[in-house]
Length: 107
Image (spheres, rainbow, N blue to C red):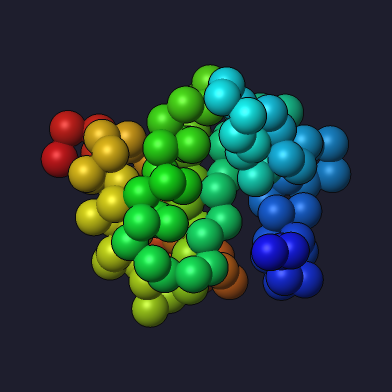
C-alpha cells in the first residue's frame, strides 16, 4: 500500500532541510526520517498496536541520539505503551507537534 500524502509531508517535515527520509536500517527496513543532528523519527498514523510496536522497534534499531514517535493525538497513549513494551526511550508527539510525552527507557 502506498503511503498517504500526509504521511509523506510529516516525514519530510521531521527530516528537515538537510535530513534524510527513508534511511536504511538492518534487515531491509527503513527509518522514516533522520536529521543531521541525530534525531530519528517514525510516523505511524494507523493507531494499530502492532504498527506502533513495529515503529518503536525501528526506532530502537536506529543509531540516533533522540527517538521520536509521531502519531495522531488520539493514539498518543497507545504509542507510549508501545514504546515501553519495546523498551525504547524517547518522545511521543502528536502530528501537529503541539503535545509531547517523554518515555524513559526503564519504565
